[in-house]
Amino acid sequence: MSQALAVFAAERLVHLSAVDVVIIAFYFALVLAIGWYLRGQSNTGEDFFMAGREMTAWIAGLSFLSANLGSLELMGWAAAAYQYGILATHWYWIGAIPAMLFLALVMMPFYYISKTHSVPGYLKLRYGEAARTLSSVSFAFMTVLMSGINMYSMALVMKVVLGWDINFSIWVSSLTVAIYVALGGLRSAIFNEVLQFILIWAGALVIPVMGLIEAGGWSNLKAEIAVRASAEYTHLWSTLGHFSDNPMGIHWTGIVFGLGFVISFGYWTTDFLVVQRVLSAKDLRAAKMAPIIGAAFKMFVPFIVILPGLLALAVLPQKLMGEGAAVASGGHSYNEVLPLMLARYAGPGLLGLGITALIAGFMSGMAGNVSAFTTVWTYDIYRALINKNASDEHYVKMGRWTTIVGVLISVGTAYLVMSFLSIMDYVQALFSFFIAPLFGTVVLGMLWKRTSSQGGFWGLLAGTLSSVGMWTWVKVDPSALRYVALSPHARDMAENMYRALWSWIVCVIVTVVVSLLTKPKPDAELVGLVYGVTPLPHEGDVPLWERPIFWAVVVAAVFVVFNILVW
Amino acid sequence: MRSGGGISIWFFVGVSLLVNGALILGAGMWQLVYPPASPVVLFHLHANVWWGAALLLLGIFYSLRFSPPRAS
Image (tube, rainbow over all chains, first blue to last red; front, side, top):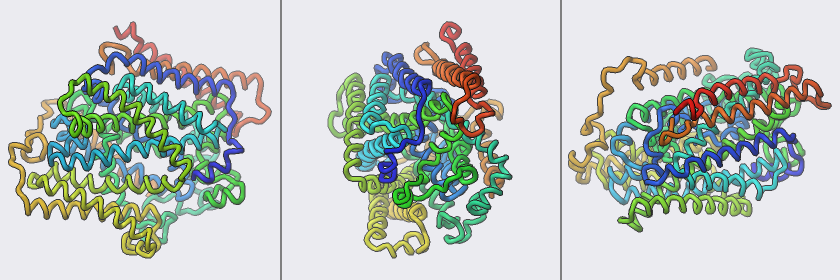
């Protein structure tokens, strides 16, 4: 992506009017004002790192989703929709909804009742210091690196779309995030994420609305795509019977078990970046409702991400192409599909709001990374390993400085990536190594009281190393793909899914075997952490529509209907 | 959600929608009077007029409903 973007940087896609610039400037002023307003309300550790644990279900739920809605995610999946068709929707539906509902109903009670500050903190309570250290160091390291990569990619997008200088984009956006998170802590990040969530929808929704009007509705859109691309582009499941029957080169088992089970559950239930938002909820009911509210909105995100990609297939006069071809021919690449559609329909004002949506997406993702990094560093590394007995005030001060330092490391990473572009691929692969095994470790720890401390640690380590091993194997010998991904036709995405599945299985097997060979923790030490020995609070005599399980069933039913509608 | 008895997040959301809506509506009205030389696709639908108006109305509602004096 980056090479193509750099080449096209000379010819910007859109030109902003004065009113567009005012809208963007107002956005920056408002997020800083919110940080300034909240500066006096984050003086204790609970306030700064956990937003006082007083967020309503709606705030925690929207923030939970917004932290995941980065602008690169918006642009990347719109590009994937143009390239692979509606198959990209799997990452929003089966790749998210079941896991979010599982988090709400099954895992949230243990996270919440244990009063942990973080996911590594839960591992400490359940398995001991070794598992926490392994998890927290890898998470902190990868989070700031990923933040830097996203920062660099976003700056490149701004250069291509608007002609902005890369240094300007990097420093203005990162310093803004650093200021408002350092001032107001997690509360400020969450407030801004809610605002950013609203702006993303307000700015991006105009594309599918206008696009559907131009295409003549959904039926005409499908017919046009069948002519200009292929009828398979508008089917979600019916082409997944064989690897070679669909443009993604993937089999339904990879989607269901690799994406829908391991990757999705790993990300949505154990990645502290998103789980931290739910931990800020004011009570257990709010903590359970927050992921359900997030899931309800997540189901509709394809309307502003996937649908624009499909509409572009039908209405754009030019054919978009891969990066290499775009560089060679001077055309536009898949990655430019969202800005191209924005420029197609959005006049002055609307264009500014659309660009604000992209910037808001980037900043919400970065604030999520920074606030999660700050908490894990302060509580799970600094307090656990370096300075155990400092005052609460000291840790808050450490948190504020860590916010600044975390942003500066991210900026440094952004410049490092600028010099060595291949780092981007390696770091993204590295991040995937930890997610699937971590889910195995956490879910076994929550649901099986026999899991021992040694089992948890060695399972996590074995799962991570097996993932690294499979990735290296395919890099050294590409023909190994037929073993790792079960088919020589498998593409990168399919390989990622199967690698995640195998590493999760390795983690679970090693955890179970080592646990059976070692001494379990006594039940008394597992209260509040494990199913079966933890008394779960009863919801009381409340009406059906106030129970999380009711809304989870509603969301699940809509999820099934949506999948059937575009089968 | 209020923080320490302060301003609701929904008030900030309302202010944002109000200001953005007013600016977009204003730009749309300007283009009604002075049509651009190279209009966007479906310009005749004047998306920025009705989109801006919708945001403005929503912004007014949220700003008033969650305004600090009313909240206190």
